[in-house]
Amino acid sequence: MTKVEPNGSGVSAGLFFLTGLGTGVALTLLFAPRSGAAMRRLIGRKVEKGEDWMKEKAVAAQDCVREHVDELRDRVKEAAEAIGRS
Image (spheres, rainbow, N blue to C red):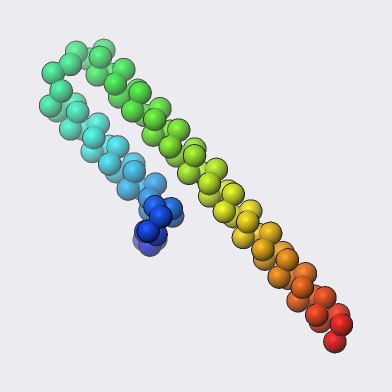
């Protein structure tokens, strides 16, 4: 299992979110005095919010990976230049 980082990033943050979302949906279904149609609308809104949250996290992860790739590319380029000078 991946380590949870203090800033909330990492793969397990998404897993925790989905677990919480599922738990919340289950508890809502058990204890809410709403009609079936109202409950389906509520669940649909919650799922859409979760989807938006996951998309935001995916974009943030892509940005992080791009930054690390750029940094690594620069380091490799510097190392290659240093080797070429030797």
